[in-house]
Image (cartoon, rainbow, N blue to C red; front, side, top):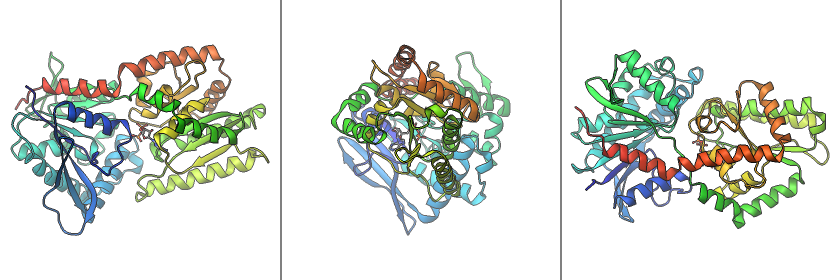
Length: 460
Ligand code: ADP
């Protein structure tokens, strides 16, 4: 008899929250497969007075427990430490990181308050699954509140090389806290290896024969669980009415020109300026391609309160303006850049229409967009994926056109090659990628993680 599942993630899929997207559905499925449980997270509300408890309600057998934040907590914990320190460092952008002691203090305080709160919802036989970089201290805080059962943690962003992680002034503190987890899941083997190497080299951790690591008087497991999507669901979406309508609208505008597509949150990790420069380079070097392909970049702004994001927006506006001014003609605009999000159905239609997808982050987690693009293709006439070697998905997709996104010339070369790739080669490459996304689906991911967690007993 397995215990209930207790999930903690910064945002939840509580009623009223957008549930579209694989992760929210996967975690909801995990809860319902267990016959219920608790899903804890931030309510999304900012309140004036120090909040004490959580808003609790039940839906479909799942108990949601949502806690508010004060403005100071939101600024310090969320915008500050999580998104101005941890996010850039974990994405190898130490240059953009801001290390404010007050932000860490807020991060610590929120993790403490939430850890205490969450411990109150547990029963002895439960298992706890904590998500992502907002909650690196949450396991330790739950232990301090008396929880001694299994705690799993999954990191949805990369874990950087040890010397990069060590640039965080609080890395020792974070590492000790992370050792309170029994199972730590990462998206790629590279992340898992980085984390292990950090514990072993920096903290004298010992790799045991069974693969676990002994460190800070605890024994923990660090393992790769490559997150995925539901390929059948996405393939079906790409054939639906809404997807077709979206493809028709764009198809009408690009007028049978080859569509080169990018779909990302607007984030400096995504390599958007490099991508635009590379497309500009393709036009510079290949006069015959001018007027024959169109680049559509969809990139809704995110975290606009963080300065680095505003600077990126300005840079993208400038680049698009320049390239379009250089090359646009009366009946053709080379780059269309839409700073807004679209429903999954629309994206599915655009993926299927695209001849080439550019998924070229400078450093990224798995990058599910790459998998969605593959799932949405017409098997008889698939498009080509140009994929950064620094995207998590690169480990699983060696038949994409792998590129170094910093190397504008070779990125331009890859786009050019993708645009001209013969059908047979496109099919062969796509078939291998399609097989790969069917191996580690989102359902596989959650089951594999929970199975591993169920067999992990806490070692004090
Ligand atoms: P990240 O988690 O860093 O944003 P991923 O590629 O792993 O990157 O996941 C992004 C998810 O968000 C995908 O499911 C994708 O469909 C969705 N998404 C990304 N960009 C957009 C957009 N412009 N509009 C709507 N959804 C988007």
